[in-house]
Length: 411
Image (cartoon, rainbow, N blue to C red; front, side, top):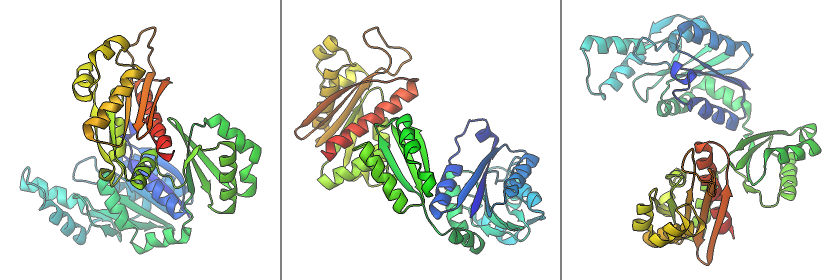
């Protein structure tokens, strides 16, 4: 089974809003074993959306998922564009109108009644013969067939899109496509401490594609994400080869991120964590609290950006700050100790550094970062020399800190 995704919205096309829907749909399709052939991002123009949907059809796909451009305003044109691309009339659907009106009753009344009614009727227009999806917000989605292709139309706001996609998957024509794909989600490995060129050398030497294994690799800050299709004996053999070539580098065999792995290790040990962050500004805490159930093992964190905060909250001595500076090994160590003591945690991780573009000296350049991991019988300070812009340095520092913590917990 093959599919294409069309993401609409001038704000997405121009980079003002990051696309979350295409990635979400792509991940779900991959998990179902559906091959995603292309993702098209297009603006709000009616003809542009119509042409993008037609282009998606031209690839001979079984499923097209279109997101965005549903709503009451003048630039919400996706339903009309899909109707034109599929050769159907755009009609007001009574069931859709009832759903929209029920949804609007939950929204505070704004503007004149006539405008509200026009908006409701616009959102109730769908391609003739479409199956209407109930709205999570106020705009219904739809499922329509065009020749041999099933088209799913979903709203743009990510939480509405996710809810509508779950409903769409239950529609018989969509379920048939997904069921026919036969599952076969790829195996997802995550590796740390391996650069892409080293991985590619192993790939060239072993030629897994010659044995029917499709290997994908995506470089992320401090990590490699590897997908193996199909899962099975060849995927097992290639995984074993990677383990032999890069001992200890594979930290996840199910696609879990390092923050999830850290959480699992803490839960297994029955221990709790605190964080102290300066240059990363809460990035580590945000990643940890993104894991469901993190409250069982993450107590909290301190963003001690200023020297005063480091001293007042984490008990970093003034004399230490004066002698070594805020970006130093001794200060990172004391930050970790202070967070551990302040929150009563078993473990702590602390980060302090210079992310740039200013604040550097000849002795302490941009990219100098110190990380400390502290726990029962363990205290380690690591100096990092990172490269890139401010955001890349901060992201890499957070990722490396989490990996140092993971290694310490794994023991």
